[in-house]
Image (cartoon, rainbow, N blue to C red; front, side):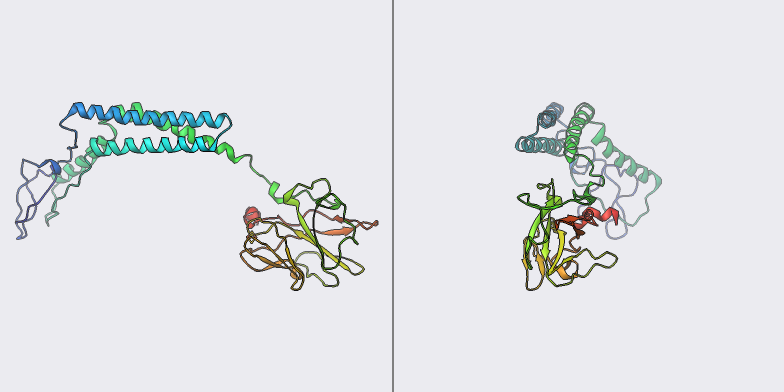
Length: 332
Ligand code: FES
């Protein structure tokens, strides 16, 4: 009969099956590697105690790293220091857990033949008792480590981990739905010149901002003179093209709806705007619908008007949120 290993808790009349339908009784003398109460330092209490202190020392370093994180963060933050402190905290926490598992917990496999017999109530109770003893050994047999060290250290490190949440800043609210454009805002170029309807030639393109907000990148728009071409208004939207003499002028957000790069390339032959980051291509004559690339939304259009003195102004803000699509998902 092959040698069969089994856990100490099985002390009932039924033992492992021998292959011929017979069972052998469980022996009284259980080898250490089949004893579910055995762990490497069980027979050496002094070394076990010393190992507890070693583990506690590692976790004390974890706590110090956590406190250091809080201090560094509250004094202005420094990414490199924070990174090293996080590394130290996780490394010492993990090392302590590894030492605990390696030297103070059973940690070895216990195998037994299942056999064909049905366990009697006594055996089932013994199994339940064995399982709960495993939990006990983890949580209560090392009360010093769990209650006096691990819980406080976990608390300090947990608090330190919460601090970076403050870096997320204020909730954006509905700010992402609006730019600085407003009804009557003059279109000005990057050097602050107000744009006259005759300033932009046919097939010309210019970057513009609302007057007074030249550095507001979310408001950046491209103005194009498509000449006699007609820009097809999007279904459900008004026709926002301004036609003045030979000029057909339209304006669209400059922020790519894929990932927010500046749409800066203009192909006059195909009347397409192209984003240089991932080549999303927008058909100007079809209301800047994407026709190629990863962008899935058209570039929002800026409604334009011409003042009596010929200067171009915005009729309203963009009629939809600018930028990547995820910005307005909650508002869909
Ligand atoms: S950001 Fe424009 S294509 Fe990706």
